Length: 296
Image (cartoon, rainbow, N blue to C red; front, side, top):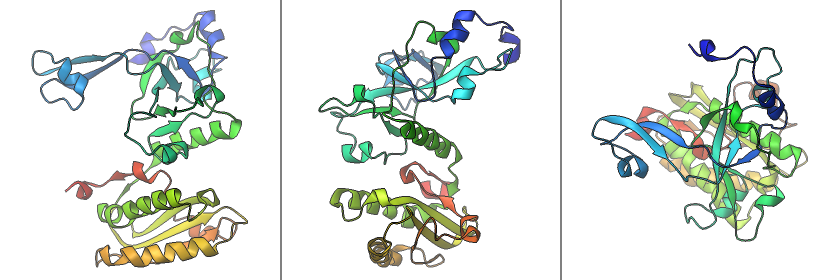
């Protein structure tokens, strides 16, 4: 097992290097990515381009990015325990998507994609650029890789580092939701958010989060309630009006065996504890994992 491979005493230069880094720092140079794949049935171009002699093999992916974003929690990265027992960190590729044509850059910069993290530090703010960390790929790197490297700030302030940590947490905690709910309610809600972001019909900064409550459970729902939780002090009137209109628009497409209530719009201060205890946050809607039914 892994414990048998870890030295009890780590080189001093490794321990010293670790103290300089934190979650959300960027390092220059993305480590070589190697992954196992079925060479005849690959889903990445690199798998086909590097096809081995049939069956399964190891594919090397070079030149994927110039930078890497550290996703490991700072406490696990620096690990003050003695002896340390976590020899790896995880990193995600960082690249400029401004000219890729794959994404709505205004939504990228507003952190509206579940798997992309916009980098806000001054170094990544050049005209005509849009630098992101891509959370679809996280690879383990031995901590000794950091020796001789200097951390590069990814975010402009401490609150942005905190939001990054929260995004990683949500990504790992997201639940599976009834495929019918995702298709008939959550997907239209995602389109609604994108639409108002473009039209500026509503100030999205006033929205703290969307939440959902399903009965009897998330996987097989017969009753669905959506909550739009606003920042304290925000006027609920324009949000309630827009979401009431949206509810009327999509209700005819919701399956007949699902009772979908009008969206409940409240500030976080108005929300009762008895309501919140049964609610699941719906941040990063595009990143929710559907049930099998959603793929049929």
